[in-house]
Amino acid sequence: MYLGLDASTQSISAVIIDPNTSAIIATESINFGSELPQYSAPSGFIPDGQDGEVHTDPSMWLDALDLLLHRLNSNGADLSKIKTISGAGQQHASVYLSEAFHSALETLDSRSSLSEQLKPTFTRTTSPIWMDSSTAEECAEITQQVPSILEISGSVATMRFTGSQIRKFYKQDPDQYQKTDIIHLNSSFLSSIIAGSSSSIDTGDGAGMNLMDLATSTWHLGLLDATAPNLSDKLPPIQPAGTYISMISSYFVEKYGFSPDCQALSWTGDNPASLVGMGAASIGKMVISLGTSDTLFSAIPEPVTDPNGYGHVFGNPIVPGGYMTLLCFSNGSLARERLKNDAQLSWTDFETEALSETPIGNNGKLAAAFYAPETTPKLDSNNVHTNGWDFDTAPSSIKVRALLEGQFLNIRLHSKWMNISPENILITGGASANSGIAQTIANVFNAPTKRLASNASSVSVGAAIIAALSDGHDYEELTKQFCQTEEHATAPQNGAEAHTAQLREFDALIDSLVTE
Ligand code: XUL
Image (cartoon, rainbow, N blue to C red):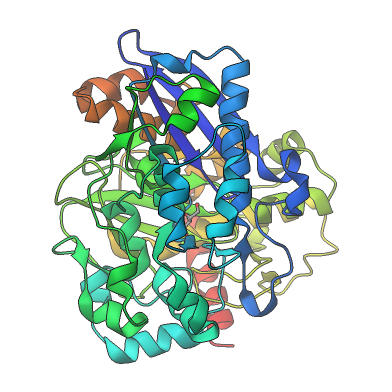
């Protein structure tokens, strides 16, 4: 059996797969906000950060990992049968650790918790996460030093990416930066914990740092120099996802009953793992993931860059030398939830309101619900923008359709440069279960939507598949077993015309916001 872990923004989840019986043996999830209220992070991050800063206490991730494994164990999962473990983390988030981290890992005591033992090794008490938009200055400085950053790293200097976050730390607190022995991503941090020794970073997650040379899958010295001094001494090596790190730490053997022969493998980022879990690691498929962030991604053979600078190229986690392209939209589930709560709706109301009480196209009423700063388009915002109507006083059915159509028009608008027109759109992430949302995507893209038949999370399934691949299982076979999809919503008869006109108007609305 193989264990896949998914350390996302709001929760940490696990799935155990058994390729011998094609069965998903167990799933489990710990929500940070509700299960670890002591961290005062209801949505997985510290609220009310100043000047675009969005950080999290990395101890929370450790407590959640302990709780997750405890829960799996007490709910009857036989962890002694797990042969290999891989995982995926929210991308870009970084953890800063002193030299003491290495010895603390080697001597973890199962009578105490992970957070108690590792907290003293943090040189930066909080971790910047992907929602952070506080590093415009650092991005400009790095770009000035290395103007070809897009061609080298696959992305323009991007505020949520790790490079500019490292630079900000170095500038704000040079002493603590100097005391930092190793900087991990959320993914490589947690894989290090499982292994009991420092892990590598993979090319899927590593490309989200603005520090990796995509062509060679190595750290780019010019970018490291432009970011912070001696950075090459502080970064783990880059290796493919699923690389063997070591046998699992005895902490987990003693505490949760893992076999001492269980192998700890390197992890990847949540989006790259989801590409694998959706069976989309081969060319020609397009996935929209509806999580805390909404993302659109697709496997590509060669790096292609977005002329507008919003798209990213990451390494394909299971195709050596292959790539994936990705767009990220920050106002995803939290925006949907905000409207749901403000209008006092349930998710079922959300479905029927979006589907039956308003026509496709919403009689021309458009909205860009950017309740928080948006990454695509890059915009500092804290409210809903419309094409001239009052969002606040409108009936909730109109608001729901406007918000959903706006979210997916924004995705369609910003993915035009990819020139991908797949026969169907694979959808995943919590909100993909909602048929109103699935239908709105089918309408806007004029293509049917499909989702995983198993209802499992594609990120943890992808991580479990990476774990199984490393033990010699065949990708095609695993895909047939765990990535079957079923149609969820069909495209409407008149969808294309309705939304093509709407797309032009939405484009004008976005233009007016960006140039404001
Ligand atoms: C991708 C991105 C987010 C995070 C959180 O670039 O920033 O999708 O991975 O899920």
